[in-house]
Length: 304
Image (tube, rainbow, N blue to C red; front, side):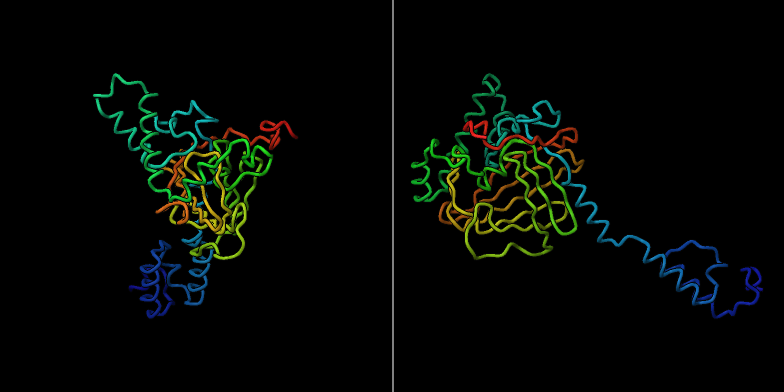
C-alpha cells in the first residue's frame, strides 16, 4: 500500500530509507519517483550535481577578484567624484593616518568654524610631519638633509622607485588572474606582473633592486602585495628615505559597495624608522577612465 502511493509498485522497500536519506543530506527537491530509482542511478545523479556546482573556493575567489579589479583614480585625476571627503583632498598623494585623524578632529570642533580649510590642513600636515620625524633614525634624518631635488633620479629620466610609483596620483588598473595580479600604472607606463602565492610571503635575501621581489595574496577581499629586498631611496616625498633591503607592503582594501579603494603602504626599514612607517592613499572606481600612453620623461626633462 505504501509503495503504491509512492508510485513504485516494484521497488524494494529497502530503497526508500536510502532515498529519503539522500534527500535529507543533499537537500534535493526531486520527486520521490526519482529518489527511489536504483541506487546506481541515484549515485551518478548526485555526483553530477556536486561536480557541476561551483566549488566554494571559486565563489570566494570571484568575490576577491571583483572587489579590487578595475580602474582607480585619485583626487588628482577625478577631483569632482562624489565619494571624496575633505581629508581625501588634503591627502591627495599620501599621508600617515594621523593626518586624517587630526583633520577630522579639527573639523568636528565648533571652535574651528572661523578657521579656513587651508589653515586646518596645514596644521594637520605639521602634526603628521612631527610624528614621522619622531619615527626616523639619525641616519634617516641625515639622508633627508642631503636630499637635492636637482639630483633626483627621476629628473635624470631614471625609472621611479617603488614608493614613488605606488603613491603617484595618476590612474592605475588592477587585474586579478589565477596565478598573478597585474597592476598597470599610468605613471611611467609601468606594468607590474606579480605572482600570486596563497598564504606565502615574498622570499627574503638576495640583491636589492628598484622594485624588489614581489608576491601577491589575499586576506579576505584585501589584496596584499609584499615586496622584499627593495633598494634604498630618498625620493621627492617628505620624510621618506630607505636603505637597501627594505620591505614594502601594499594593502588594497575595497569599500563594501566597491566604489573606493583605500591603500595602506607600509615601509619596514629599521635603519630608517624605529617602527614601520604607514602611509595612506584613497582612490575611487572610475570605469570610464583610460590609462594614457604618455612619454615617460618628456614632461620632466624635455627628453623623449
